Length: 313
Image (tube, rainbow, N blue to C red; front, side, top):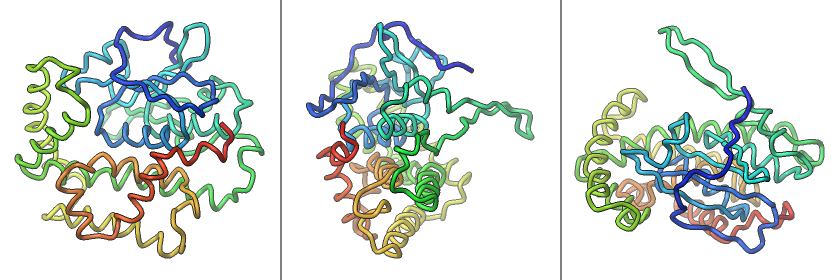
């Protein structure tokens, strides 16, 4: 399946533009997102850390008006300019990050050639449903220059922890953030504040998102608790995963999973976790685990675009 090429941007103005003066990548990026979606936060953590400029289009999580143009309905969606007013559509947070990192690690490559290295593969589950998987999602497509200084073991370790963030850590978040109806509503009020929904959407639409969304996610959180076999007190499952992450950092005796500097696994875990920073679950986690030092160090690195210099952009 060929990448989807968009001729001109859809008619939805960006809510804000993140402009980094040192960005010489030549990329024009437009991110369609929910402000506190863990996977959207993961993409933003990557873009911020590597000092890439991008526009943000906030998507109504109930009506999803801003993604009507796309056959792919999930977020994040990233449109990347390829010249002549055309954009290639990139879907799935992990694939977006792998594609962009492959380009930054070896910018002599053509972006479309990199995208073609991540083909979607459809398959049928035992229940007869059709599933879609993207091949090579956790791997970078670079030449020898892009892999310089990295061993096979280091590459596979990064893949392992990126996958852990997607398949383990992320699944303890929703049941914790929406643990009770009160916490669910408080979380959505925070989402509204972060996303500036009162400025972007009419009052009726903003209220629909907050109240209908909070109730729906409270119900979904209960189902997710059962599906992922979380403990009766879901906070304990959250603490377990965060302690597991901190424990493996201690074994390495390094500041980050990537050593002295964050790698893609650090950014994945940080990005996913940043989605709940304003929620009670995060405040409780700071008190009950030692995640704070690593987390705020990662936040400083992302805010200061600390990854921009080593790759020369």
